Length: 207
Image (cartoon, rainbow, N blue to C red):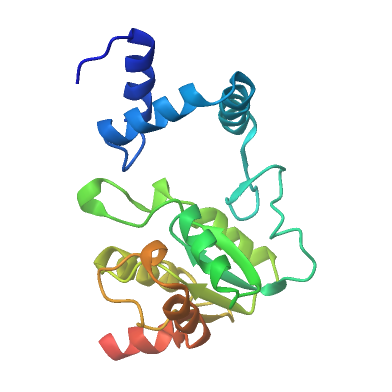
């Protein structure tokens, strides 16, 4: 794609590094910014820089936050006895959009996948286990993507909790096997959370 300006080309190349953004879309975004007043473009750039520089991860649940403890964990109106375990921050956003869950979260930062070189030590599983030991949690809800890696992660964590008196459940299989939570519609995802099923019962059936 020929460019008459190296400045425009550099901007397009940077936009094209974003997921799901091709060169044509990147060009359209860059040209849009050129048409905007300089103050608008400056606000856009400053917002990105400020986000990258100041964004934090909640020390309790590992969700993104503006402070050490995110607004969900610090909200006294949330059900402190429930923790929903998710793979990524995007899953927190997807579940929050359903308005069907009022408990807390724990973001693993991924799922166990030996083929990809991701083991338990690369995830926030140990901090989760510490939370369960130190907090008065009554129910642990697994909302991981319904695939082999997700099931492996659930099985691994559930085995670590066999001595703790905690109810362990998983979202119902309204989500197609092999699907991803962030792409599920809000009604299906909401019903999957509301009609969650016991994990231990599933494990016992396999043995």
